[in-house]
Image (cartoon, rainbow, N blue to C red; front, side):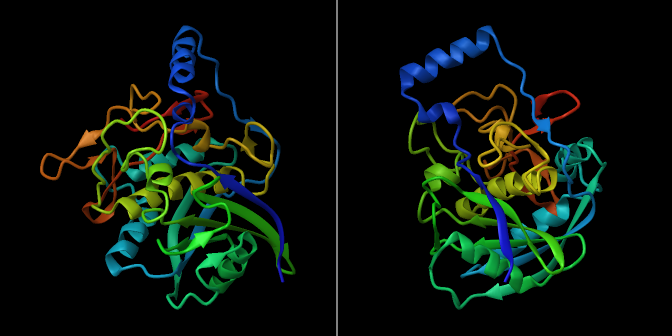
Length: 305
């Protein structure tokens, strides 16, 4: 049995200021306009995930073939440069500016767990059990994706997804988890495709793939993956305590385009036919909305548009 060394929680993508009382959020926003402090993610001298990384997927619960294809296309878009700009691959290239060079990602083995072998209410420790179902391989990350009818300890209350690491007789390994929030907390984990639970109540954006739950998962998956490759073993790049760090994307919460502020995701592209909002092109004519990522060369949160 693998021993868990850590499980980093990635909290809601809802803008942090929107959780504050309106008056306080406004005053802090004005203060930020006066003097914006530089954002620095310190490097803690640990190992990062670099080179060729295979992401194996464990689908836990019911996902339609279309839903699975949206996520697999996203993973395969991360290292596919033959896309028009702005692209998913351009967004992912920012991880290559962290120490150690680029990280190439491809989708690997897929395991379907449609019969809920562990039930529909899971403990955090069971994520590792599920992750192990895809086996172990050199330079791999096992990703557990849970369907809309599966609840996880802390899901919707303190996290929308997470990544972690452990160690067994074969050495260290990395895993991650993201849940579909559409039936439980889309206002927390699928914003800006759903109105937020708290804060400014602007109209939600139209999801680029027509699925609020899956497009919301993409937002959190992007956050999880960027954190996993730049801080896989709790000693990479982060700010704050190691038990609750701000990482490559979670440090840039709520920013999707230029001019973003609490409750407003920023200026993004809009499909003239569907009205869907996006900021990145992927393979198979896919469009995605991706969060800003901290760039170590500029010490700022960079957006694609």
